[in-house]
Image (cartoon, rainbow, N blue to C red; front, side, top):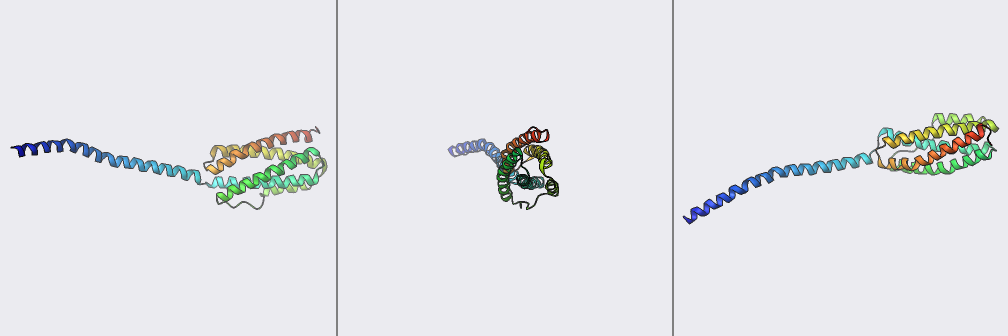
Length: 199
């Protein structure tokens, strides 16, 4: 009789434990799947931050060409202009865009992008056009080109600031955009002085 009561009690305990065990077994795969999904999402986030799109590659290439072109044109301005405002602006362009070029080349290397060794065809055409001018004609043309170029660059960097996914690229854009915005303001001042005869 005692044996029967013991077996009955054991069966009752087992019956109470089985639903809890079954529930734990059912929840375990779900918890594991949730953990796996979270890990995959984290990996995807890191991949998106570290990868770079074709459009972003083109932006880096064009930014490098822009710096090279600005330095080339500024050197030309120092050779051809006697206007102190033009020369001061040109020297500022050499200083800042040389530094920008080092930064974008470093970014390109980190992203496995080969920096361009030449400016674009349009930039070469602009330089050739300035090369044929002298005196006040050169000063006005250079000032006007600097205003247009820097306004264009500011707009392109603002757009990339909104679109860029790569973390290194976003950091570069955030660092460079304020410099270009200041250049656009300086170019507007120079254009006003030179084109309107303010100096």
